[in-house]
Length: 117
Image 1 (cartoon, rainbow, N blue to C red):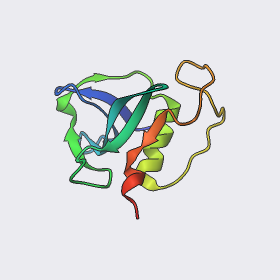
Image 2 (spheres, one colour):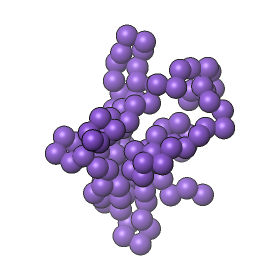
Image 3 (cartoon, rainbow, N blue to C red):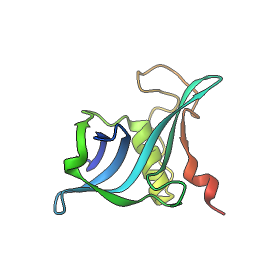
């Protein structure tokens, strides 16, 4: 079972992070933003400390979480892992969106890559 959590905070922000049971915090926190585009919407994954931090890091206490999504969408989870580790993960079903319909693979955007030199 994955320890990556997809949650909504008391601030209303939607974030992903790696749950540390020992510390009872989310670590390596990334902010998930919905970005409108001409083709509909895209999901942006940025460091929570953006624009002052360029890497996914930091921690948030679990008591700041008001909602935990039951399932972490695999395409968003894969992009989160890629963003924090620079490891590209191949999907077993490329071109599948959250509802299972075909889509282009550019719906989830890792904005952190824009800052890497």
